[in-house]
Length: 217
Length: 217
Image (cartoon, rainbow over all chains, first blue to last red; front, side, top):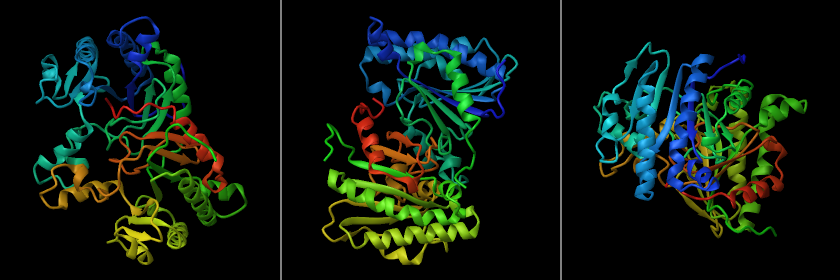
């Protein structure tokens, strides 16, 4: 197995490019999302083997739900199917997103408090109907014992991400956990998410091990 | 002059690598900062020629001030010298940062409300003793008419950044305006900031003009 001199504790994943991949492969845009489930599962297994402690997947956002309804339904289903598959594995799972909206899939409500599945082994956070502004604004509603925005956000139970890997070539965060991404190293893979290969992960980890960690200091 | 099919309205600049450049050039680390003033000025002039409407410079942060005092003094001076040089030009200038700390240079206090210099022509925001947490936490203190964190942050007068260019090779935001960087395209230049060349800017703009703008949709 691959050895690294330094591994990230927490990896964030932006699985982008499903629609572009679908179009390039003679499918309708919305058909791409189903091809993103298997890659997520392979990635989870590989990270588990490597000893990664925490992983956050950018499922879908409130911004995304402005897309045509046939696409919204397709990515909602892909997220539900991914989570229900993960439920049979070992993980401490937390589904994070705005549950008060009809766009949040009700099948995932049981996982909106962290649950231990099997032997636990790895923290997995799955963002579903997530919005960066929804997350931040939660700090305005919460009780006054929270002295900072970071303590009061909806996703306060999710730790700082060390490394963010984005598939699909775009070099932007698109609202992915604004507080937890503050100091994250950001690695972009040009391949589309359905084209995922474990080599992409190795490539990102090889780059990451040579970055210095300063936390802005 | 270079022509682009689409220009960013607002560019964010992370001028990193001053210390590494100094070390590679036989200088003490803190001596690098003074070599970052001229590049900033050249960049301002070039952006003005191109018609860029707004530019934000990541001067120094509260995180940075944890460094040895000789370095802190050197980057404080470089920021003061940069602003005082800019004051002779055309700009709508705003210096943004925590003025309640002794680490905020008092010479810059007159510019902490936006001032029009000369003919204005370009909005320039200069972050000085800035902290991402300080910026966000401002929303907890401000009056209750602010309904969202984004409306209540200290830097609410600074608009969304379209493109962020970071010199010095590191692929992270390091706390640079977490709200305004949500949808920003992020371009990294491997050269150190004191090695700035206008070709770096052209390279970033050429890349940027081919990115699609979705704002997460």
